[in-house]
Image 1: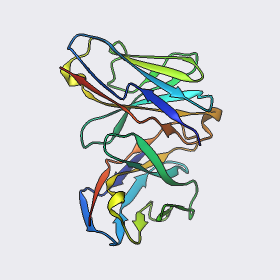
Image 2: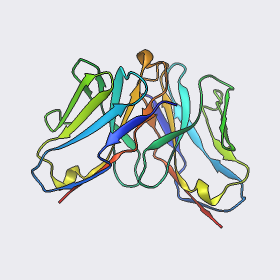
Image 3: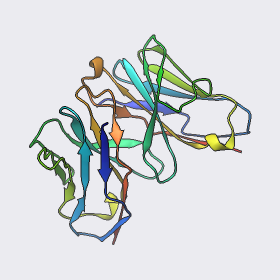
Length: 116
Length: 112
């Protein structure tokens, strides 16, 4: 079946650094990718939707300059958390879909980000 | 707007007990409904789905029926196992799968 790979799975870094998370679709062309954030014991909150070759659409309350999303190819989207601070520590999950949304989203295994 | 409400957890059961996790939704139009499972430290895995009213999704002994009249999609399993311990999320997507709305998740603990 379709597979979405997310890297890294866990990252720890100092406050003030920028962190890049990659999301790859391994066996299909992902026209649309999604980025979610999950706080401990809470549900997933959609952060942004990105379509290949165009700017991401951010959900209300999500800082565009803080969470930079790039979807440069049909198999790769990246989320960069800029100047990360401890409050950015969270579990970030990407998902991907294809065929103009005619298939359900497939989720990556998530990235646990810890900012010291 | 569209939303999903599911029962709060944690739910603690003994092995081989019957499981029900309630899920109700609010949506305009005709959404598709999903159950996802998340094991500790992992992402979400699609468990089952139903795309229209009266459809029954099933997988690994779990099943859920899309009930339009009660706007519900309750998850059931006749006999749970310890390995079923995880967090279960109910979700809906408007017709084109492009946007998902998740419930708050229900943690299931199954004791041997």
